[in-house]
Length: 116
Ligand SMILES: Nc1ncnc2c1ncn2[C@@H]1O[C@H](COP(=O)(O)OP(=O)(O)O)[C@@H](O)[C@H]1O
Ligand SMILES: [Mg+2]
Image (tube, rainbow, N blue to C red):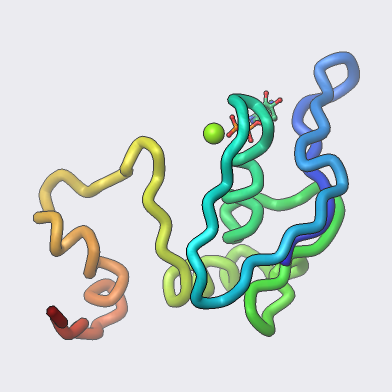
C-alpha cells in the first residue's frame, strides 16, 4: 500500500508527483500500471519498492511499514523480498542470464533450486 506524494525540485521547478494518491496491490496478482509519459509510473514503482522515498506519506509492503526504515533495513528488504527489472535492465554483463537472475541468492550464500 502506498499513500502520499513525492516532490521533485524546488521553487519554480517544483513538481509534485503522485499527488496524494492511495493505491494497494493485492498479493498473488499481476498489476499493470499505465499512463502517459510524466504521469508518475516510475515514481510510483520506485517509491513502492523502497528504491526512493516519498516526500510525505506511507508505504507498507506486506506487514512491514517501510516508511521509516533506514538504508540498511531497506537494502535487506529489497535483496530478500523484491525483484525489479529496470527499463535500462542494469544486467551484469559478465554473468549469464541465469546468473543475473540468481545473483541475489548466490550473493547471500544460498543455492536457488531450478524448477520447470
Ligand atoms: N529526478 C527528477 N527531477 C525532477 N522531476 C522529476 C524527476 N523524476 C521525475 N520527475 C517528474 O515527476 C513527474 C513524474 O515522472 P515519472 O515518475 O518519471 O513519470 P513516468 O514514469 O510515468 O513517465 C514528471 O512530471 C517528471 O517530470
Ligand atoms: Mg517512467
